[in-house]
Image (cartoon, rainbow, N blue to C red):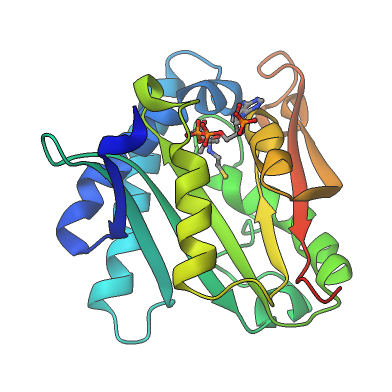
Length: 228
Ligand SMILES: CC(C)(COP(=O)(O)OP(=O)(O)OC[C@H]1O[C@@H](n2cnc3c(N)ncnc32)[C@H](O)[C@@H]1OP(=O)(O)O)[C@@H](O)C(=O)NCCC(=O)NCCS
């Protein structure tokens, strides 16, 4: 089935398609974050818009973060069916004493489902110190935003994308980290990552009592270089 799939670098015009794939592929985890009707649709749309802005800056903003974007394409109809992102980190984000303003929830900012954009900021203050400890503050590589269309999941495309990243970007001598969700943890374990910690967000804490239920498990995973 994957004979017709090949992996390529993605470019600026691909970004709206990549965001749409993410909205579809990540539906179940978005539903866990934003389980509160009617906020789910609003949150999905806002998250998608924010993703388009963030990814586009890679190509339009000279000071934007540098990362590689890749896409999986069905050669029969040129349909993009999955994508992923790989980024080199100098360690500054984990070494920051406090989260940057883009990462931190402002003191007067309301968190919860009425302000879905606050979730990432609320969550990041829980994970930065963990990553500082895990990476020792050293440079590392992050793989993220692996998303395959639902109809194509479980057919080897995620593996093809990881193999492509390691081959094309020479990752084998790097510490490669993944901040993921419980639903993708087994995929990364199959690909050789090890779960070293996990941030469990209490949704009733984020959303307010009576609004959110359960823990959202977000594992921290590491694949060390061959030498380690
Ligand atoms: C996670 C994801 C990118 C994996 O891509 P995929 O193309 O479905 O994965 P593959 O088919 O290449 O799977 C590779 C191996 O992992 C296993 N695997 C994949 N997802 C799994 C899961 N959820 N549970 C258990 N095993 C899984 C496959 O069975 C396969 O094992 P095998 O080589 O022994 O046959 C894809 O399922 C996805 O888009 N999920 C939703 C979005 C998401 O959560 N992304 C992660 C954000 S960081």
